[in-house]
Length: 103
Image (cartoon, rainbow, N blue to C red; front, side, top):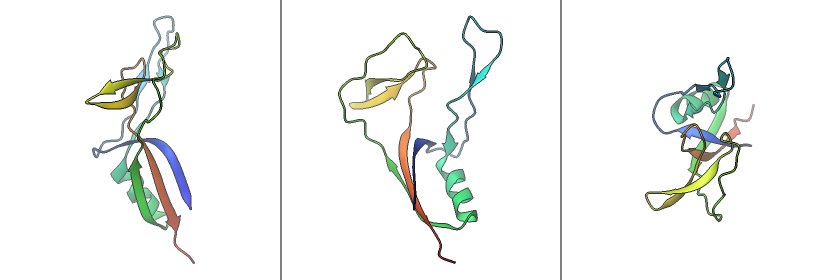
């Protein structure tokens, strides 16, 4: 069984993010978000089955914003608690589960 906690995009778009701190010259990478469809397709090609992706509900108290803008904190959006970071990315956290076919 495979269990993954990560960000997955509901839309059929893989997202590759680059950013630059104002003190830096080079672009940094991070917070890539793969589409649920592409992840499922890849897992199926590797022999996975019973693939499920569950929405992760942020059900803990407010995480405060700290000096590190790349660390996420919690905010309320549309009546739900969500995670945000200094890149203005609302983190679409989900839990993926699957099992591999028996050989």
